Image (cartoon, rainbow, N blue to C red; front, side, top):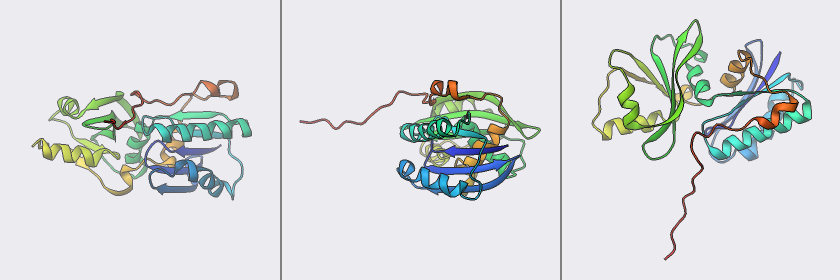
Length: 231
């Protein structure tokens, strides 16, 4: 069973093809505002030696409003053209799954963070049991101070995701020191189409052709634009 994974909800534009938990091909670009331009060429590159796939997995949010629309519209177009079903996957859960993907051995709770502007983050909370992610807090927008309030001093946490650096900066600017937090660098913080596809393998929720129109991105917040005042 080949699954084509699509991730455009974050700054990463990532495409992957897996089969039975094995990565067959993967292409990723880490660059903002290129998703709509690069997504089709990346898909072509990933599929050029394989051609066929059985299901499409797509990152469904939360994340960039524009990126989510690009990824989902592309997934729907592929689904209609190929007559293959779509499996939507939580972006935050895929970030948390990076801990398993990168074979990080830990008993810590996993707190994936994405920047939601100002001092707010999209976040959720997971723990690992038998190489599976169990959701403890469902995806929501949280203020920095509210995240601090639910962290327990007797537990360890892995802070992961593109919001991790901003969270660390806020810790410093608010003179908050927490020794039970673990931060990672490099690829662990970037959402991957591989994680999207691997999580889709484990999901029972599949949208067939007659259901695809029902799939909507999980924004969690209303879209806001910054308008310059004119005087």
